[in-house]
Length: 139
Image 1: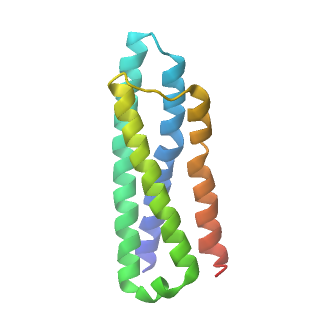
Image 2: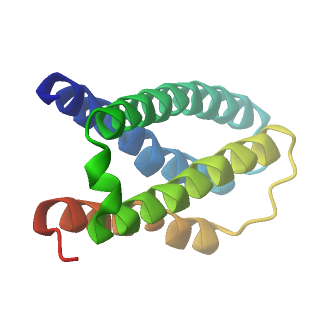
Image 3: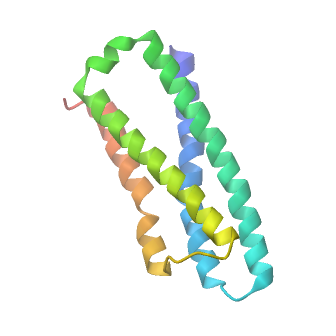
């Protein structure tokens, strides 16, 4: 179980690295609008980072599911229900990042720099809430 937990944490860190930096790239991409060379560079950076983020997410989820399979009693705990709900929201943010990257790649982004800056804070808020639930186990 400890090996699963260790690798779960490693890949959660990798996943969050992408979730933190990808929206920041979107902000920079908006700032560089009108420059075709920058557009291609940002599209490449966003695609590569999204790929790494997909791998981190998939492996974090796989190791998390493996831990739950070995200790299904955790599924009866309120804090785990709350955590899994926040993980579902995190997956929605992840999917949203993929859709934003696609919009940027196709030149169809409609989001403002301000919106993207605010959106950039969402993964941090989810991370804080998830860590508090796992460490404090309030329910």
